[in-house]
Image 1 (cartoon, helix red, strand yellow):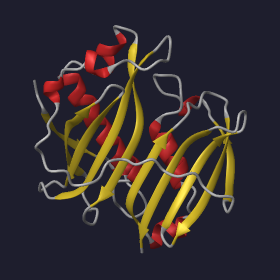
Image 2 (cartoon, rainbow, N blue to C red):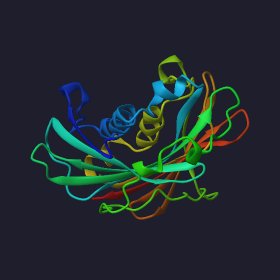
Image 3 (tube, one colour):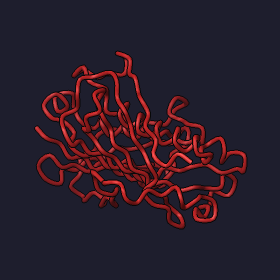
Image 4 (cartoon, rainbow, N blue to C red):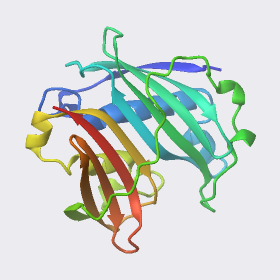
Length: 246
């Protein structure tokens, strides 16, 4: 049993953004990849679950910068299981630069579902509670429920879920959702501001050919909520809260 995992991540120039830093989507992907590697090492990864027609479903992410993002192509991601409840399990992460200096922290919530019925699987019956690490310092809070936007929103654009957006579970990938949310802000905004905290709630599956509308509301200065809404049934697919610093 490996209760705490530490994984090195190397990024190529194509994974950097205009600021010559690892793009935010690739930072999130490094966290999710570490989660997958740690689960695989401990025999509750996707391939293990697939043998019994089960899979993991990501419910929430919270990612917070604790210091300025370094200009580096090498990171270390540390991860561990923080809690296991009946439906959801909570996993935490620390993100370090190549000199092992902590600069970001994250927390995710996951559910296990039956692929055929799409119903939740009771986690305490299928996961070893000994995996929980309860005495390690938490450098960021839990992912919270993000409030719905008010009527004072800005319609950004409409789009359609296409082949390259779809993952192994045949719905839109988590990284694609994040790209869409970041694209709700102009290049000028990204040039003049940095993300301080990013949270996302995944609420409803988006499938191939679904048409979507992106809505954005400024709650207060540097504080935004963005919703991705499915046009066929008006259900919110995901909701993001972004805090920026100038």
